[in-house]
Image (tube, rainbow, N blue to C red; front, side, top):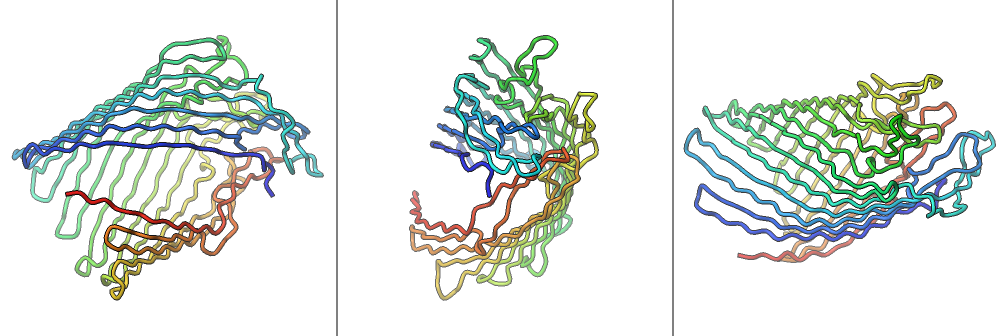
Length: 452
């Protein structure tokens, strides 16, 4: 039974875009895409509940995030005879006014007999007078990129790239009456190659750098306690940075009826956002975390005939906290989770699908999909590990000229499972389950417009 039957998530979203393409010659082409987005998201989230062990009361929150985006993407591609090369240059800009507010709700906590966990939360009172966040921001995102692909020798293709990102915003923080501007800038290179050893067999490798600015909701969330300098908010958060390495191979056999793709990867992250858990399950933030992610990915497709198609894709991965602080208090027994595996990060996942398109009924398709997720740790200290799950989905569709009708049956066996399970690090903490949807039927009709 859910401990929070009052939580909700309401979303209204609009997306639209208009694209223009032009070929200047057989070696040069350009496209422009203008887009607009409008998103309103209101929540009473379970993750916002703050409860201290043994207490008969708790705190939650109601929040709303709203934004609009106006943007333009432009790209030009130019081919050259020199080394059979190609240059791609592009730019992306969007302007996104955003506003966010959040206020506290008081909760009653009905405790279990052991007085160490909560059986059910109920709302005692909404407290719009206690604001947790309230800001307005005008976000400007600018990305400029170059990619140069060349073919120095037969069967070897090299790709290089460089991207400049500049994310800035003007803000008004209605809680401390502060205003100002912040910006995050990063230059990210990448380089990769593909080499075809012989027809149907090849190797590839890639290296790239990336970054992720801190979210606005983190920056403008009130600190549990002011810093020594008196800062009440997280204006000092830095963007996370990542180094990505990947090598792989592909090959096809039996006249391309079987295709296999195998890859190994390693990603190192630094300045990642540290969520330092407080006694009431709230968090204090720092940009100081280091993580590593490594794994092997495998893909296989088999098409014995035009009627049947089989595909399999899976990964085995490990996700570690290299340096990750949980507490700065000398009285806390657990101060970090260095060397621990990340919670909610299964080691093994795979997806398998068999598709049937009968020759005697042109336009009809059917498929059965099997999704497998292995068990994963529920908490950061790796003491509790939950079971994984298997889900089956069934899909049918029929296309006649420009009209397609389809039916999807998700979780076809109506299995009861949680797609995520989390738990605190204290011995008295209980697991929190996020239940997946039961058997769900989706029926739709689609009309495809074709222009020439």
